[in-house]
Length: 304
Image 1 (cartoon, one colour):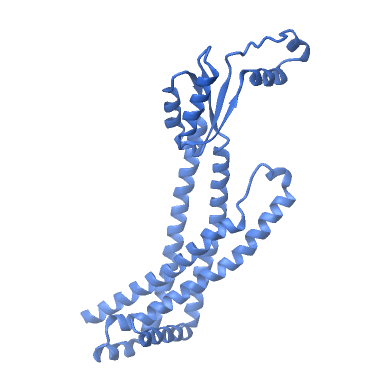
Image 2 (cartoon, helix red, strand yellow; image 1 turned 90 degrees about the vertical axis):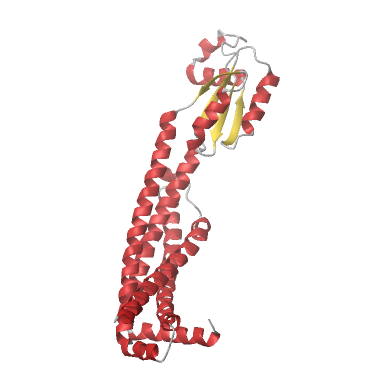
């Protein structure tokens, strides 16, 4: 596309927005509302998934060893476990540490003293292995069970399945809401562009008669849709930034006793993804809505 054609399309697109300012404002308002709701939903989903991910790293498996195993063999098992992609971290707990923790939690001091220097949990040394992704638990457990010197691997299938179910549910709900919001926004963009075409119907007919290409005729309307999409994306981003910052600050300060165990994503982490996604959605909505409408109108003209 030549520069002259580009600037002509840009100029005509802006004119179309002014001519149909009521419908343009309605489209901008709808996209803004849709992306604002999308942003709020994204805040909830992103933080929820972050909390789940954080919780997943606290879910682990416990590895116990054969009786009489040497420390060298235990270290070798630990090195092999560390090489696995499923592993976030690994902690060795010696038999002495296990006995000390047991006495502290479950035995009265006078009863613990009766054992003297004996350790009834002499074969209870273990590794606590924490996962990057709880859905990988089964593959890791199968691998560890196959290692020489491993007596038992304790793990919880119910916890792993709960986290996987939550993640799947969040994914399905997110997809459904996004599809609905996009459909509404595209419909309104289409309505706005249709009004612009109706106003310039005679002009378009004349341009077709003098040999103007479909691309030349279509370009101003596509520009119109894209501009509306960009404006409709920028406005909610600005509002959402201040809302997110204020809400997270308020929650963490006001309800620190309730939410001290939860970590929220920083605004930078949220908006580094939300800004390009919102702009992409806004531009995409504007482009698709206007392109499809103009294409349908031009085809109708050709058939007449």
